[in-house]
Image (cartoon, rainbow, N blue to C red; front, top):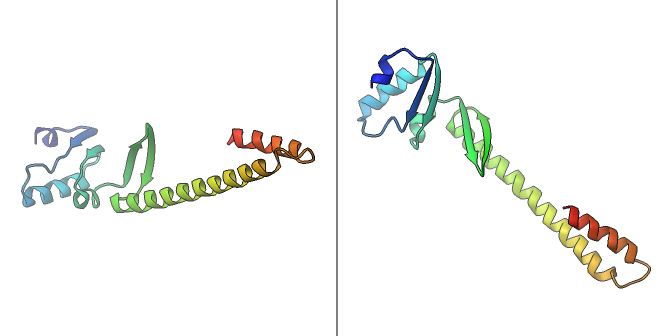
Length: 126
């Protein structure tokens, strides 16, 4: 509460809705919407986040990703990104299987051994 009455350019809030009743949460939401400075907010309350935030910084596997929009928008963007990554991975695995099949079939044939070797090198680079 003290942080809200002091003027500042930066406000750090960790789970600000914990232990607040509905009226206090509504008041805090209105107050934060009008806050002129930078707000860093950590919360698991999606309904609270949606109307307040317009940028999400998501940390995953030691990587920071920035998403523009509210929390619902972040979830949609992240789902799309994960689906694209899954598709790329699937495509890569199919290519690996195809190359491995070629190598297995033609490694022993003298006429195709050089092509098989080049595909082995291609697999190693993937």
